Length: 254
Image 1 (cartoon, rainbow, N blue to C red):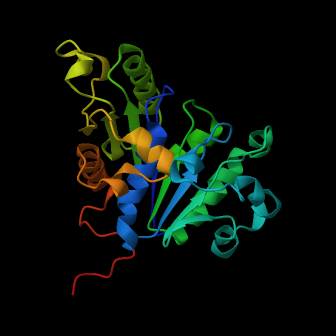
Image 2: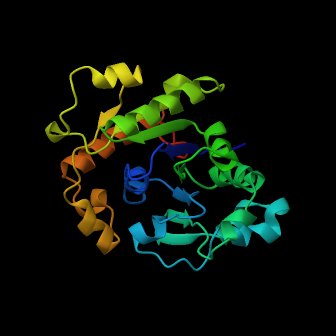
């Protein structure tokens, strides 16, 4: 039986900072080695988690195809690209056309095995619905929906929420995050409530330090843990932790 928790990060519109949220969230959950974390880059066509972490893509999900029917934690370990001790990444394909080789059934099998080895599996998805994304949402212990404070992005999120509400997902295991949210966005009062009709878990301020952190291949939460964005990501991480604050592999209190 799986022990780890799956957190699926989705944005209905590209350019919302979804991958940056996912990589920084995985870094915070890893907590300098306190927990074992896997970041799964499910953006099979344009995944760039490797770039954000400064990794070389020598292995990817394509390497799971020959062993798709016999996946075990030991086999999956051989597919990983290590970022830090206890922090591994299963990267997206890099060759054009390889994304079409990966069936949604492989995603489901991977997400059944990965929680056996990791306390958290953070899934970074593409900005479109499809069988691969639904496979990751179906098994998620927590869904994080990222948007920005512009009308088109908010309307896309409203459509996403309507779609998710038609599926048998737990609404309480869902967090909405407004990225690049500050006074300069100048949204009319009440527009967020009118468009979303759902509670908002967090507002991330403008990421003034992110471009430099991306170019260094170092998440902002690691480079500048006291940054306002880093603090907001830590608050978001608290929402996906079990209610007792412990991860699945923590020993019980003595």
